[in-house]
Image (cartoon, rainbow, N blue to C red; front, side):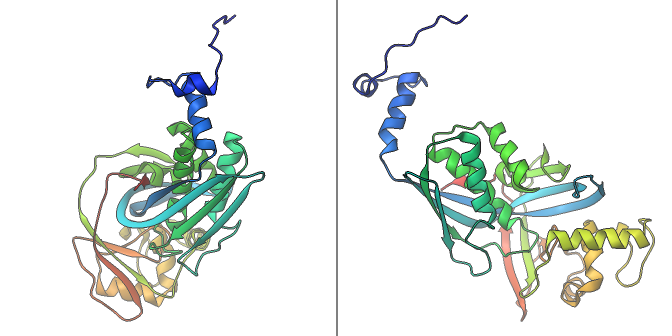
Length: 311
């Protein structure tokens, strides 16, 4: 039996603490000091690219297992998160993009609810402004990185009730790319993408090109992969159109390229370019894309060794 007794805690003696140790008195004083304040934080949320992506099988839960090498890059969304005490939980989202929902369908909203459910914190009013620079449905983890940034930012605002491992656990519940976006750098990923193995970081410049009016959901890309693999199960077998699966670093590019003339146009102009994730963004290393009508282009980005962080 633990007979250790802590001294009585009061506001007056908490004010006089001078230690850096996380004693009960200090924890209480921190909470009392901050509980009456409105607090905010700005989080930088990086995009990712898939340097490789191989689908290794279908899972019982409906997802696919993958082996992929992912890398965070210097294209960022930004979240400004504000919290204040309230008698009920209120979550308000708004931002710069008209292509995403600002309600419970947004992964940022879901991340907020999951964090509050896990930590059982008192009710707060939480407001989030999303500065959207990463294209939507582009294979760059734009939604995932924002949700990962939301979890990270809330954990900072509430004085880190969750460990790093705890944050990773919530990331894995919400999606496949959140863990990568939380940790950042170059990672070998497996499972749905949530299992990480750090790789040595390599600095390089990378450019992106995406058809302006074409987004491809992960569901669509994996469905097309399943359909195509049923007809062409051998890596070296060339189906009609754009060649054999083994010629593609990304299995999902092989799955969708026959169906979209915009992707075929990119591949014709830049044969060494590779689609990221489920598309429709292509990337090229140490290459610049020329301006082209109907295409969004971002040149001279860099690989980065970190994930979401406070700025």
